[in-house]
Length: 279
Image 1 (cartoon, rainbow, N blue to C red):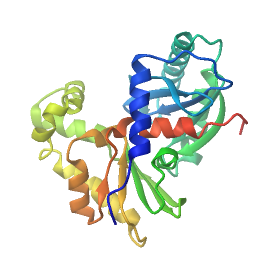
Image 2: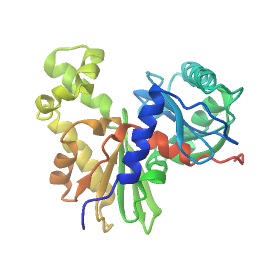
Image 3: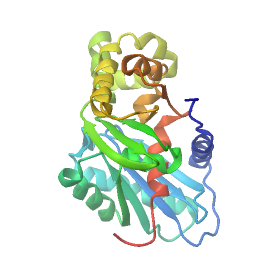
């Protein structure tokens, strides 16, 4: 199998990063919104009627832990504040329709909470998918595994002929990376988070994080066992760590790739899953 072509995904993410700095004010018959309530970061993406990014915003926050909403009021306030800011930037009265996503297999536990947060912020929720499946809206993986390593959890979706045949989610993610760094470098958790996000530090911290990456690899290997997986595609903010794909490939024995910027793949996919009919 050759390397996965992430061209469409990478181009869309590049457009999003540009409109995050300079939103596109234009007439659109409808706007599609994606809200990603992450453990470390909340992201809102706005697409126009052609499914092209026109605005976006993100904010680091501590309202979700291990994929579960732990600060409901705080989450609502962040999403509502983002909504109002985006409406002002786009010069429109109201963003109406939104999609959201949850860690795989947690719909019975927390799907209602995520939906309630987005609705309380003023949206009509028209789609609620699991995170890796939402990511595939722009990855377009036919056969393989999508692994979304977020702040609190590692979510896995296995696809056959473009259809999801298995999903799983386990608690281990960027938060655990930061805890290891905080202990190793005698930093506060907040300092470790900032240290981890700086690409200039990635080469230095990769060996320190090896045990946690190995744990993530074990989680992946456990859930893909029994499936004929051609490749693994990594998404999620934690996968911005330079070299993580090589370590996971070595540990799992499965060719592993990631887009240029994995952080915004899932939020974009969530927005692409948005419709104009209420669920």
